[in-house]
Image 1 (cartoon, rainbow, N blue to C red):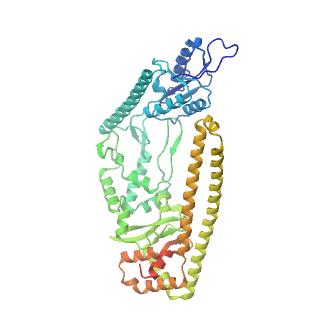
Image 2: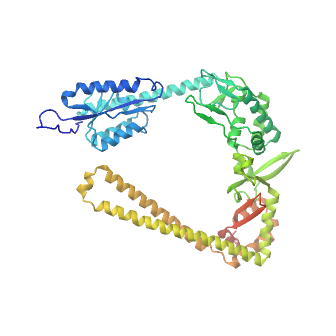
Length: 525
């Protein structure tokens, strides 16, 4: 590979100047705080090599391109990206590194970098590895070295995984964030019991066994002020301390660490740390979790065909309300609960939950009432039409904006294409990248315009006439009681798009599904 050289000033005598940029990298941040660290050592060796080539016109650029704490398996490194930008701008003639794997440990990334260097006629030099990139043999040696660098990186990864696997099987703690009830030992490498937090964990297990419900347990935890594990990293940054949500609560309840064990690869091994929950309590909690269907709740609720599943929403939070059960004295009571209250705590939602029987009966009675009261049906129809018209107006405004964007981008593309070919080619890859970006934006705008137009067509086709609403509700009332539970749920889903429930205000509002009303009116449901 030959380097483009900047002509020396004067009468042309003497070698041309070769501007050399030194790139250094270290995978971890350990030791970077030292006055003279690995990055400084790499740079010192590279500077010495450049000085030895002074007779060839080599000069060292003052800018530093140091990536401390970045892996060589990725190109997402700030100093490397800055260096590539300087190369694209024509301000570098040669890149000097201490060793090839400092530049990259990925063969694919290395090939991309070398392609950029070759395109801009920038030389590449490794201080400790002698090869000549001007010849095909030199290029082959360079690619072989890059392959070995990637092989070494993958070997390190494999050895690390094997070491962690062996440590897990021996019951060792291998790092990461400790769970509530434990602290990392001062010297690292193991966890110790935090007595105060361990007592909280035992109370959490007892609460769950008492209530048999994650929602009830979360409400009690919020009332008691219990939060997730709070800890400080080696760098002094504080982590955790957030309120429990459903997923984090279940993670704690199902974690075998609390009974003195560790899990790896689907197997559980005896741990070196002390248990904070007895095995009998832990097993009873696992049985309750399995009974509640915590890992397959969706299928459990589907089998029970909740009438408002998928259509009931909490109005204040604008979140779905999911169907659940609570148990007491051997009986099960169905209810709907706001998913925000379920995940983030009872205090976050004013609606919280509502008994399933009450809200379902109310919705069915409303549908019956609309079918038997022409004035009420007319009011519902007017509201439905108003909502449809508002949605259509919004879509038309969006379509106008998208079409203006299409026109603007098309004009920009035409201006790029109108430039003389020689001028466009002289700009290098930037003009091509700009054209590709504009064409991508145009395609995205065209796709959005088609989607908006399709939605407008659906809205126009779904405009409900008064006779259609009356006919649909007349069909609904007489046959309702003869339907199975699953068929009733299907009928609700067909007719109603959304049921919004505001628990604090005691208000329920229904939004109808136009296509379902038309299907029921035509006898196709």
